[in-house]
Length: 186
Image (cartoon, rainbow, N blue to C red):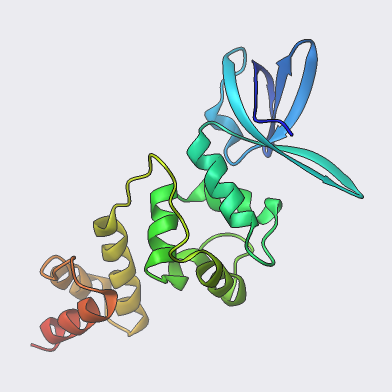
């Protein structure tokens, strides 16, 4: 099993990078290949998947990204190819926060993640994620979640924006919704 590979980026494609190390070019699938620069040396943290029909490397810029990837692929029904887009489009702290708050709406925004998989992610990972170096920012995500809930209830964005800033962000999402509804009904 590999931990990391140190080398130069020689090619960048839409889903992978080619990392040359010791005259060998490794094709490494990564969440955001365009965050790398051609001709630059990187330490890429890798995870190797070996199956009957596959021998692939998945790579990450940080240990925290790799840890989150490993947590995600431990979820029943969630493989490496589904976990990569989650890491590409969401911040690690946002993903952890969504899992801890049971925010299914946030998780369903990712490609190929439906109701069933989002619920499974929460079931398998809630309370079990402790990734070193990741600070969870509840305020940003709770605003986003509250806005989504209020939109789902049929309120217009203009109304929502005037109310959301008045809601205490230290409350649970249920309490935030109740408080926002009281303000909207005034």
